Length: 308
Image (tube, rainbow, N blue to C red; front, side, top):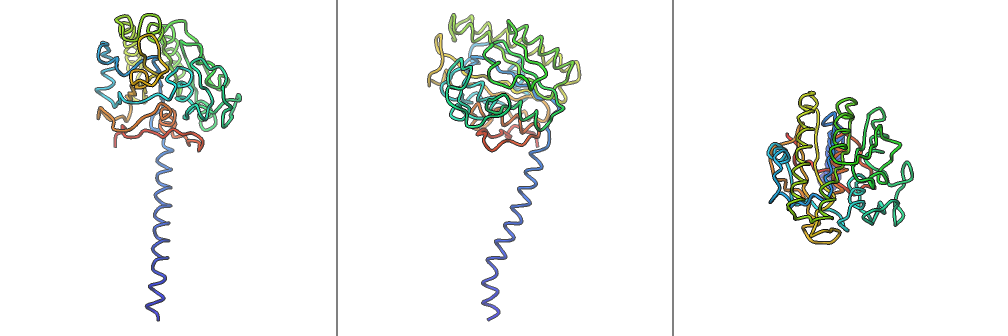
């Protein structure tokens, strides 16, 4: 009789033990996720930078980031492979089916956003920082003016539309070194401009990529001189690639983009195995800053490149 009762209780006891262990594991994981991995995160977005560009462009500074960090040349944009759609997805941690920006130059969502946050748009990484790190400084510095419609301008300490990539990078560098913000988004557009006018697989396009590489190298050199690189993580990626003089389609030349991570706590393992979509970028930045990622975001943090 006693043996029968014990046999009936054992499954319940086992289940309770498993529940307890899972609860502890979830708590530990949650605590780990809330740890800020670096004081500063910089997102550099190079418009029109297709992964194929590495075959022809001489970009030693970006290559140095890859050699001393982690990267994928098979990350993908969302569809359509157009600008506003993908910059919104990157900053908003979700695809166009949720944030509603669906055209290359979307100024307002063509489809109602599933959620609305501050300033009446789908919440971005800037709004997460504003809510969870309210004293932290943040900035958005961009060459393409369309970026201004894709984030909450009132929440940042600086938003600046540069006329050229050198002006954009100069402004961003001064902001970072003076204010030491927790997050800075730098958008560079000149390569995409050349791609549309001359061709995305042209010598002129690769020359422009090489100019951008110099700007990125100068930024990193400045951060190192100012002793800021020791507490900084840089993510370098793009919104889309290009084919002939256009983009927006479904070819890999348009959809495959680089995704490079370099800096504090980043492994130099090289190629990442993770499957990466551009909306994972926002989630990864949130993770790096120890922020709680909202349920309605669809991106997931990429953690494969973190040093143990």
